[in-house]
Amino acid sequence: MALFETQVGIVGAGPAGLMLSHLLHLKGIDSIVLEARSRSYCEERVRAGVLEHTSVQMLHDSGVGERLDREGLRHEGIHLGLNGILHRIPFVELTSKCVTVYGQQEVVRDLIARRLEDGGDLRFECGEVSLEQIATEKPLLYVKNEGQVDEIRCEFIAGCDGFHGVSRGAFPKGSQCTYERSYPFAWLGILAEAPPSQEELVYMHHQRGFALYSMRSPQITRLYLQCAPDEDIAQWSDDRIWSELQTRLVCANGWHPTEGRVLQKGVTGMRSFVVEPLQFGRLFLAGDAAHIVPPTGAKGMNLAFADVHYLAEALGDHYRNGDRRRLESYSETCLRRIWKAQRVSC
Ligand code: RFL
Image (cartoon, rainbow, N blue to C red; front, side, top):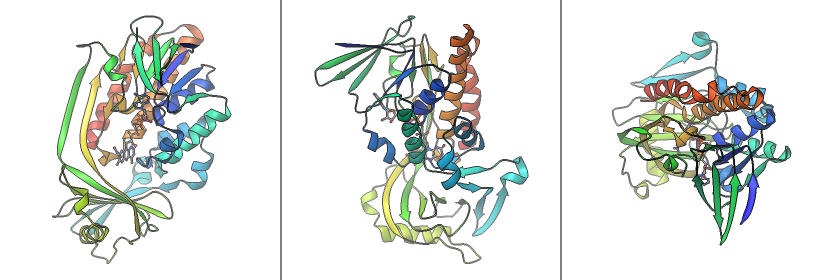
């Protein structure tokens, strides 16, 4: 058995785990990140794409916003479409803030590159992770890989391993309350090699079901169709998808989406999920490990960043001057924002 020690053991190298490790490093706190998948898998996983003002600020302020500045698409509003007529919601005019379209995989790529440049300890394809003694001052992470077991002695553990991770399951039985709702529809999404023909997102209401027009870059569009939760993607040829998108998205002024080669397609279920509290002993959950919002409001990655911002600040207080107040109120602080995001996404 190999032994390691760190201040914060982090499970998961998604946006939450990577950003936490980066923010802690800036505060002089060391961490080890354990990731089940390969680096290339993490860097290529296409998911979120809309960064809120606060997430953009966090990337900037922590010094990983350079490529985001160059390549991110600043959106000052969105369109809500009804009966083929678009109604623009001018974010900047209403809130003086805007959103930036920049793929989650790009954020992950930037954070991995920066952590490695800074000498960070990121362990990809790490094997089977388990959490032990989380109620004590010395929680442990075990990593089993091809007959070898590593023991990592931590002072805190951050469970940033997404909805299907192991961290949430390490809470003792009865110590958490789960709230869950599954919606009776899903989104069939495609990624297409087609330059955007609309500058901002279009959320379209249609009698055949909702459709969303969005983009990831000046070359790539991301489009969604409301479908049944058990929709069989095999029944959807590229031609059928484009035809349905054209029907639902066409506008009275003649605008319709530009077509292109379909690079990826899949069906995403719609679910709201929250656990309370987010902390037990020295284990703290962040991001999708603690909550899932349906992708309607583009809130998931932004919530994950908000969680780790609070967690990094709280750990900073603890290590700087022994002040544990923000650690103790971590769950309550995050849940206020999480429930608001659930409401808006629902
Ligand atoms: P992640 O990204 O799921 O990362 C968790 C990481 O943990 C690893 N892992 C483990 N590692 C070690 N041991 C284990 N036992 C492990 N189990 C899992 C996983 O391999 C993974 O690398 O969670 P995180 O970091 O909390 O980030 C959350 C976001 O990924 C998620 O909320 C967003 O993608 C949600 N989302 C959107 N969010 C936005 O803010 N804006 C959007 O526009 C947006 N669009 C979307 C979305 C999610 C979607 N899907 C596919 C659910 C669109 C879609 C279609």
